[in-house]
Picture: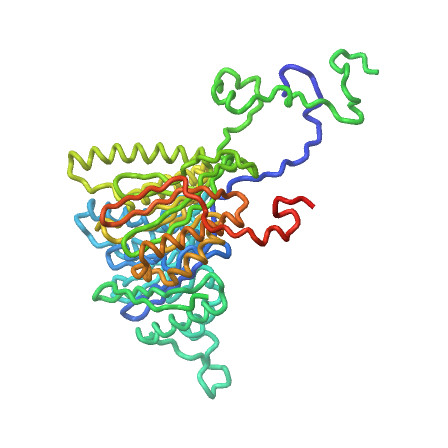
Length: 242
Length: 283
């Protein structure tokens, strides 16, 4: 072990050094939410960006129309979110160059994003990713991811800071969890049905105004992207700024 | 006594443990980097080191949009920990015709960014003059810097700065103000301040511009007064600040005003004489 002097160094007891090093991540707050309907899908998010207790900006968009009627968001560490979306947009551009302008299905987009995320499995993008659009049958589709690329197609999903506040509300109001047909003594579940766009938008607004009340990192503004067969449209509603 | 010549003059091993010879044989990492091939057998395997903390630092940059431009201000102090080491550091950098970049954080990294921006400017000039490209505008500078910053953080070798880029959008009229830091985090707002200013100055600036879009009602005079007041307040309470600063005003009529060696005016220290240890009198 030692090349110059014989010593008992190898048997010396070391104290573990304290490691103090650069942390490449931060938490920029914010929350996002996607819901799929029968012939539409929405992807909504607040527009506040924070770090610690400071509000960086009251309007910093984090949902993007990435093309081919797919909307995408990556909430959590803002720099990783922006990088991931940039990378996907870029790859979509090249896909179109290479395949004569072919439209990318949301199913393929979803699988590709898994590879983008898993490609950085050992230095992950610290984000919860959601995409929304219409599937091959024209039905609404929402895909959600964990930071390393596990993904699933779902009816609805909340992500980000207030996900734990919004998700149970969505379970109850979109998938009718714990709802039973009146008079059946809790034996017959309320049957599932598709919600209309108006019902969904009302749910989204309620979810975000409630999250704003209870979560300090949520507020300022609500931006909703709506995908239908006519294309993508955006709506904005103010939220409380306190 | 231990008669082994190797042990002469050494504290008793039974009490203190054997001497760690690696201490004497350790090399500075810079030396090792240069002689990586020849010394690999004799030196400790100390890893390559990247910036883990800033050394000489500059404090806040504060900035505002107003109806026909942007204002940025930053003081001239370079601190070495709590020592006010350099008092003539310029932290506002002009890029191209109408873009201003304000940098806080590590000063050596600031100088590196200065060189990077100079290179960007010269290469971009070639495209602009011969290929009829876009002029180098604030959004381009910001996008470029954000890529540099994110790339460096992803290599775990960050440039230890928070940067504000001010200027105009690609239309040349709409004021542009955006931020990027050592993590590559970016955002835009009508009021931006870095470091201590994010806590102390932003509330003052947002008092003038409560909603982002309201900057269109603010005149240059209002914006300037607000910035000057914020610089004074920062000098009162930020122990790493100086009352000497630079201020840049960029307007969409082509005016680019770079004021240097400004002082925090209207400081009120009357209260100090009654507080022990605050004024000049030592009681």
